[in-house]
Image (cartoon, rainbow, N blue to C red):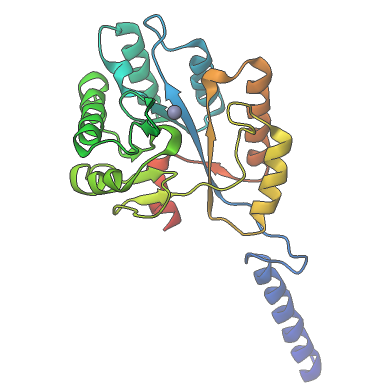
Length: 267
Ligand SMILES: [Zn+2]
């Protein structure tokens, strides 16, 4: 090979290498960003019905197990009280599959109004009230399911400064805080909320709305998405719409993970 040809060859190789490398980074020449690699499905409001896991929740478990798909489910913890052997046994079984992470979704999920003030379980309520509800929920998970919650997501995603103080001081085992407003992360991994979500409006999975918001979100190159849903509200058509979103994200190459995995994967 002549010397000039050799240099030409080297130059071409370098250009090819550089071209290949640029596609590995966030923004290509066309301005297209890669999909977020990690998705958390944040499914809210597990409760007991007639002593059992409700049918619509059973469909989620079957879907997760059949598809080998990780999902996370927020338990309203007072459902763990009392004698519900079938409910508790099924939740234990689901936890044991490895596909489902259960998380602390409050003790009673209450919202009420006194005079002009609207209270929620973890918003505007007293320190004693919130501490009792956090610790009781965790104790029930340990006693009835043999698990320790490491993720917390408040009912209505409503919290205040008291919640942050208590998560920091009294709940060291909680490592991930779903949809915190971020004002005080309390030493936790804050899994933030973006516009792209499963339901639009809330309780209605909406594939078209998801894709539109997802395309806008994707331009910001998010490292992860946490998508919220309420499967107890989903009839067959709504469930099918949820599956469309999952199929779409799977085709995008996203991995579905548990909230507990987020800190190590994202930070
Ligand atoms: Zn809820």
